[in-house]
Image 1 (cartoon, rainbow, N blue to C red):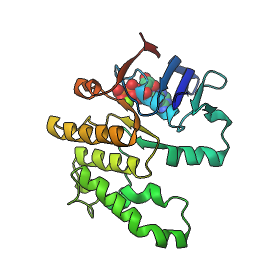
Image 2: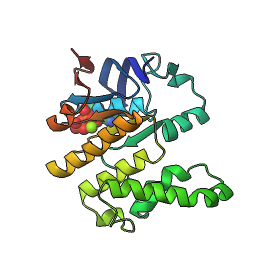
Image 3: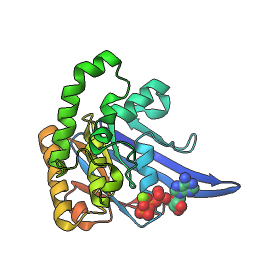
Image 4: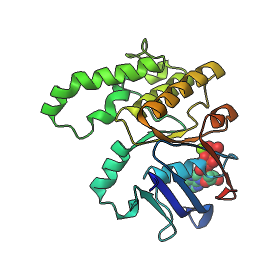
Length: 231
Ligand SMILES: Nc1ncnc2c1ncn2[C@@H]1O[C@H](COP(=O)(O)OP(=O)(O)OP(=O)(O)O)[C@@H](O)[C@H]1O
Ligand SMILES: [Mg+2]
């Protein structure tokens, strides 16, 4: 059974009275431990598809489904969907979505604090801090822990977003252009780290990218064309 599968997913945005059809029957499945790269022209619906896989948006009603370990997301209760979004999936947004008033360290450890009671928070604080610090060091940000996002470059923010996405050891990493703002050497370091997670923890991932060097490192490359997976 695949880890995640999109089956005949359709998505139409409605802007007032105008329908903007974006996805026209996307089929895609990703196995445990697999890295899939999604390529496609700007506006082809890559971010839309990633949001749908992550349970952040839904396919058009009755037009396709996303199944996680064989269970359709549309059958999840609100609580189960929250757990799916926060624990099963780690999401790197195309435009990072870091919280501006929090430091790099606080942004990174946030997913681990969601839903923790005060006592548990106090008990686990040390371990949570340590994991966030390790991830940030791995991504070359060990010297930036107490900076705020506004004090970072685009590529540094992107790496914070990646550390935050991995904080809860998600079964599935969904990353929207994770190397989009990085120079070649930094991009390669980040990919090395991700491939390390894949090798050692069978980290599954779906990476949206325009970068052929990133796509090259994936087990499989799929192309979104005309709202479908081509070929
Ligand atoms: N919230 C929205 N409301 C209306 N239309 C939207 C919305 N989000 C995206 N779209 C439209 O859907 C299409 C696909 O957008 P999407 O962001 O998924 O493309 P993309 O492949 O990620 O592009 P890029 O490579 O530029 O990031 C675009 O035409 C966009 O204008
Ligand atoms: Mg996009």
